[in-house]
Image (cartoon, rainbow, N blue to C red; front, top):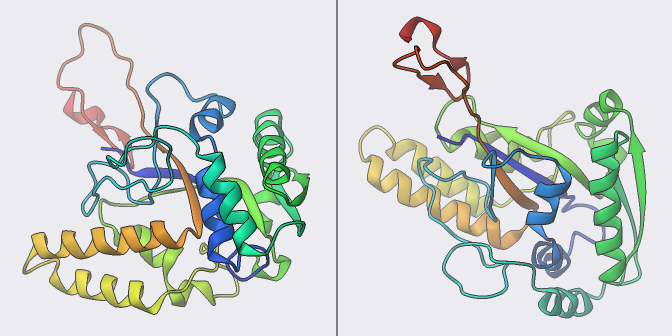
Length: 257
């Protein structure tokens, strides 16, 4: 079970990403496979995604509007033609954009890629790379008004969509002085759907999953984040070990071996 999603966030309260078409343009333009490559994930450790809820997760229904090729719910590649058209329609081209990243080799490589991509879309982008400690202190601080950052991610504490929607996607979290809602995203309709889903969880789990999936699709269309990949783990054991079990949160269950 994959419980984590790697993404970049687009601050919905800072230009140019107050504009929906500008956010969607970045989602269409980004080469998710390239970001996975730059992040040095091991083979099979990450799978491409366009949405916040991971696969095999309650409420997940494959959905990816931001792709070239077939609309089968999967990502097949970037669509630069559509991305440039949306950026032009947004009226935000030529605006300055500062990309925040970590200043380690992998962080700067991914950040430089994003700067080049934004410049290709018609923005005036530059990279602001900081230490790892500073990076994670800064992205939680809404007062810094960070427009976009690459290198974020979220892992669920337990397999429920509320672990994504509450901290990352609710109106309440958007207004907190120190927040995990780095995109500052607020949509009352999404909040209403998630409240209904939580209320239905115990009595009608199937209905709850449908409501979570609907909320996930709306968030994908609103594009406050650019989901990149779902991460997984691998266990390496000897041939003598049996009954290997692993918690996606706590790791190997040694007492079950």
